[in-house]
Length: 300
Image 1 (cartoon, one colour):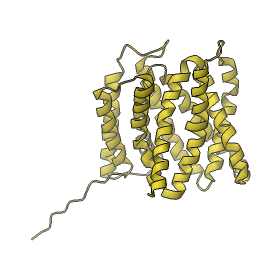
Image 2 (spheres, helix red, strand yellow):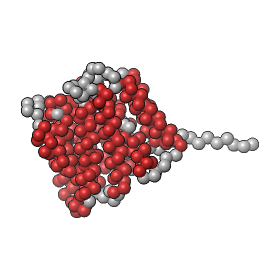
Image 3 (cartoon, rainbow, N blue to C red):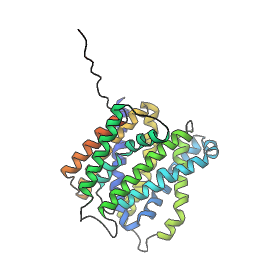
Image 4 (tube, one colour):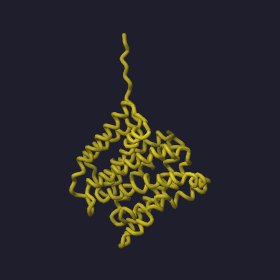
């Protein structure tokens, strides 16, 4: 990749890593539903004018049904899961569990689309899942950190549910949205998620006005970590290819842990660092980004 691509990749990792920080900042005051509505509505406000400028409204009108379903499965529901997890888990821990999304994508592609992985990728899937299970076992019993009825174990379950949803939506896009302009998919999915969440958010809107800090986190989550991040992601795919863009998966946990430590004082434990390493190695093998050399013994 060019230096500019590397810089954009690092910026994208920083933005998506920061999304867990901003969820931690806003979830308690807004509530999960209202926070996610602000996130997707703000992203839609940013992306829809760009869609119009690029002349991709016809693509959105043509494919609105699968794009709307994608908005629910890839944005509304997983964002809600992570917003709930933010009540009980640190930003870094959520970022680590988020890194399992490519593993679920590969598993679902195997079961749904018949995309059978090779031996190295199967090993990567097993390793990544083992890392996730080990980290969940280590962290799920923590007594501290929960707010209200959301316990660490429930927060971890919500994170896993979110990444499974990401895996489903990635394979659904591969099956139903091939050839659809990326901006139509991004803008349309955020609009659909906002429309689905509008009434629940109005019902669940907090009685006490959120603080300026919570609003700042929610707006940054919407405009920077969702809307602008989508623009960066699709630029990277166009300029550096999908495989190179996928490497952002390996930056997100590091940035999430760094933001949580710097801003909220959340220090990652050794179990979290070890679990992240195992998950990321498994993800690299499962997605083909890391290959095991094929050693052959030459016969004399």
